[in-house]
Amino acid sequence: MIFADLPVLDAVGALLVHSVKVGKLAFRKGRKLSLDDARALAAAGRATVTVARLDRDDIGEDIAATRLAEALVGPNVTLATAFTGRCNITATAAGVLVIDRVERPKEN
Image (cartoon, rainbow, N blue to C red; front, side, top):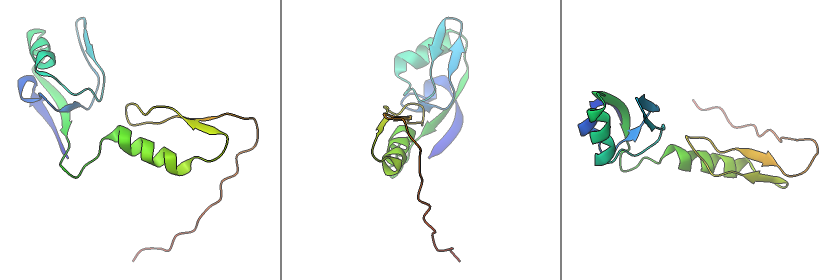
């Protein structure tokens, strides 16, 4: 993954690392910047943005959050759609949560 502060016009196609607000323009974290987005930011006076570009073998934060949440769920819970790197897990029934702890061998 490439993580950098770039001039807005060089950030087309990259993902915003932080939400950006300039005047009436507002773009949320995780947005893939289009050429129109970059031009609007530049016209509003924004010089740079902090972005991430995924390498070929990287996965996005929403996919990673979904995979982790899917590994945790069991009966009586639902998963929300992942956003900004998180996936909410909601109970669908009242009760007590019991987590079985699995010991993993220590790596050398």
